[in-house]
Length: 574
Image (cartoon, rainbow, N blue to C red; front, side, top):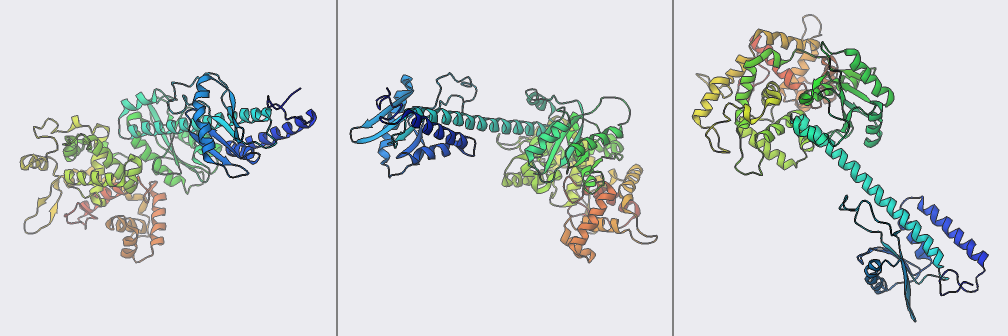
């Protein structure tokens, strides 16, 4: 016969009634275990039938306390917590303390005694044993079997919560690792990107298409999973670190000779939009792995067209690249312009070096004020780096004209923008020192990046840049860039080109553009939206085609002898 000594059933209670109460209590706790926050919910239910219920760590720390029906002296739980380390060390599964006029405390371990296989793998979670359940002055009293049931259920819920927390941590770590790989690819560091990606799946392809996916309302994790499944698990799908509703997918492209197959890109866009409704997709042309940044820019421009297109997807249409038209002369000009950064070594190791400054410059040209999110740095750190770039390159990076000059140099040099490529990389100047008059003069003569005084006035002009852009092939390129905008009536000024020209003169500021044109800001925004569709390029969001348009308009102005749209700070068109 069971007695109060073994705690299995109180004296005088019929077995059938006891089994019924235990079953009802177990069912009630099981329902709580299936709901939200099961551990606090079960503790609260136990606390209603006692003075208090708590979880105590194996080191004697009070983790959670739920007060019960009567006020509780905290010293009771503190005394119970002091004995838990000793009980855990001896391997005792349960104990009862108190009695003889003092509150009774039932202690039950939530662990099953089995060794933790995660120990040594996860320093935060794997070595932490399950805590202990403490119930003070249970009513009726609460039968020992019921406490054992509650302890087993609490232990299961506790382990599930820890496992879910670990899963979320692993998922967040995977996303951060993929973002790190994407960042390295965007700045052209392919080797470290491959090393990091070797531990992840799938492998990075040598030739890929970049897809920028814009989704409407679903959560980012859900959208990323749907896009990954739509692409058959063969693509890298990374949440965009800058735009919260964008995903970037790196999709392997067939490695074959000949021009890229447009049908393949269209099929890729249809696949994503068909499997994941409500999305818009921009697809780049096939690019090698080290040109992932160029592929992203292409896909972003295609997305600007797909946003208002009937199909919801669009592929990038290649135009003749400036890199090909300018050739070796353009690369030499770019190296000379960026030489102060290519050869830059900071005086302090903690300061950004040349490659970091160029990565910051590329991010600023692509994302403007959102560059700090792309680089994962503070706004003040970004401002400090831009100040260094301004001093090193003699460029005002807040102006569209100077941004366009820097964009052209970065575009021409591409992934080759490393310290070894700088013509002054072997310069005897000390780290962090600016080039003196002799060093600056050589740079001015070769590339014309410094301003040359015009006799009879204070005007200055970047002779080297205009000489570089004066090639006949560049005029054809410039006409091709603005041709989609030149669709006005015969003899009239095309509205699209006039709006874009005014927008560039106003430093891409919508209020100033509206004031110059005598229209509202919303009208300017609508006109520029139509210009995006005509050009097949993004204008209002970065990466923006404003740098290419500035160069194209300046080339045409120089060819016709008109008033230039703008120039570097201090030039006639500024």
